Image (cartoon, rainbow, N blue to C red; front, side, top):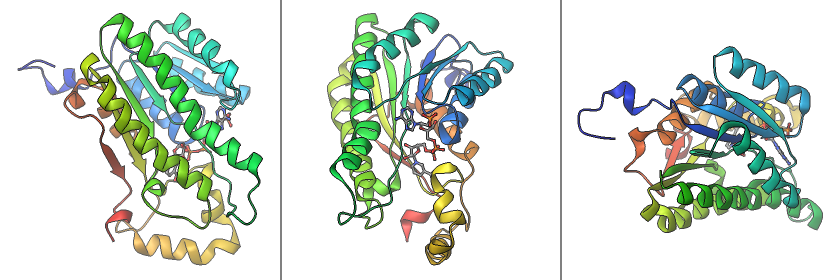
Length: 263
Ligand SMILES: NC(=O)c1ccc[n+]([C@@H]2O[C@H](COP(=O)([O-])OP(=O)(O)OC[C@H]3O[C@@H](n4cnc5c(N)ncnc54)[C@H](OP(=O)(O)O)[C@@H]3O)[C@@H](O)[C@H]2O)c1
């Protein structure tokens, strides 16, 4: 960004190419949509083919170049071919959003080793591997880039409900800081987005399951804005972190939680 650049130019992603994991629904879909609206070409990565198709159609209807790569992020050997497929469809990546994730609601007394491994592989290890491929590509091209890790406010708190999830989200905050230090000299900024409670499939349990009615009441009471966030309310922050407007920001935690964390 140069002095005198207009605000619109600051946020303009025209000519940029983005990868958004988990871009076929929920927060990832809102992020993919907002990046496309800002001018980026967008590759989404997820498993469900019907949802992938629907998301790509929506992005194309906005006038964006878009592609879906069907991949299970726990399948490590599949990650490099998936990354390469995104780059061959849309060109070298400028923006990587490590958004895909899931939680298993089991404490240490119930969770199996296999479940622990699956949560770590999806939320943390795949993010590291894709960041590695993206960093190599960005460094080789010499144009800088943006890596955004979608962590969670759960990365800052202990949790008896989903310990493996909270560990991965804390790990992503650290991954952000480590990569930010290593990649700063290459003009690659790495930041974390920390959503609070948003209305997506992932939070169906607390929003709709009777067993968690008390937890829901407590969560709403604790949130100054008094409600769940809607996915589009996170998307602007992703555009900011993907754009020149955030060029002097790296290694940071950007909390979007309706004020939940300040109590
Ligand atoms: N919603 C919230 O309140 C909240 C709060 C804090 C943080 N977050 C974080 O925000 C991110 C998005 O959450 P969300 O609420 O949008 O969740 P969601 O609606 O459940 O969507 C999860 C996305 O991740 C993809 N995904 C999951 N496992 C995958 C795998 N093994 N391989 C490839 N893709 C996979 C899913 O696609 P497929 O099923 O088609 O593969 C889907 O697109 C997550 O990292 C989550 O931890 C969410």
